[in-house]
Length: 375
Image 1 (cartoon, rainbow, N blue to C red):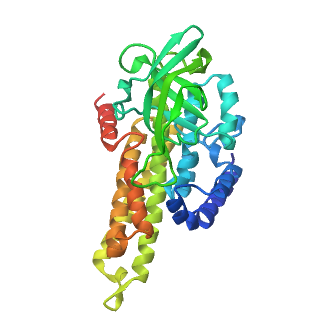
Image 2: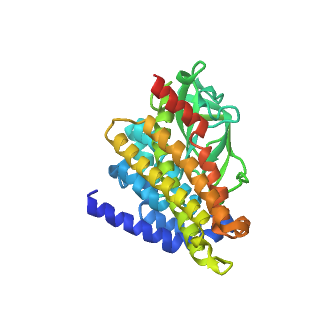
Image 3: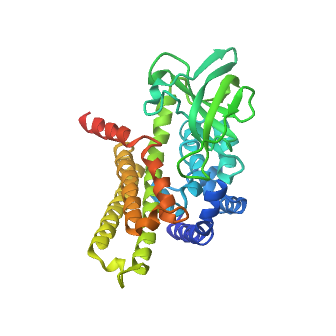
């Protein structure tokens, strides 16, 4: 995509998010669902496939372009991005990086069009921060594998048409894990009820159960025993995308904060004229600037092949923590009103808390960063 075409995409997405998605955020919060017309419009704009290759119907954006798009997508409720983020990111990238030509040809065009939704089934009840200890198994039986186990907190599970499932085919540790493509409706696959979360309503997660699920050997993605490596590659890409979404949402929260500080009066003067309020606003703008710059540099280095691990973890760690501080300051500027339901910054305060947990907690990012340096 040339620079003008990409600029046009950015402008169209920016207008769509601000004019059509933002006004319906309270509806999304109340109904715990994305309106179908918003979903359909996102399909038509190509948002279900912005990070998937052009040959399969996606936009084929480089990561340095993807993060700039996510700055715009992140300006709205995180549920909007979650609707198509997994298909573009951690689920779709499994097929992009490790899928066979047949698997890519069968699934990527449908993921890119939004015809089907993908899910990334890695996390388990006792294998979250360290997925190398997962206990879901895949046993070879002739020309098939039989999968048994359970996954937890799987994004888009209630809507998913296909699951990228990580299961143990060999011994203990990371080298015993393989990846399987499992279609919804396969006998023995059951999705639990949607989780009742603190925030991010409209973005659904659930448990997924595998009870003697049989898939053909051709459903394995990549070679046997390479699943952990495949998962980590997808997560590294996803961490930069999440960092960019955090930047976009921090910008939205700061815009809400500044607008309120301009309009709200106390004691005959607007609160934005008070230096302590200005200090809170200045801190948020400074951290937002740093986060945006970090994401852009990390994406550039990723595209250049210079760094696909350290930069994404640094960006995800900093930006997920940063957006939490920006949201906290916003509530403080709003005062009592910031604690009331129906006020955008209260909702965002709950929404942003999840960014420090999923796709690698802040503590896991610290370990990744430190171990890369020490190695």
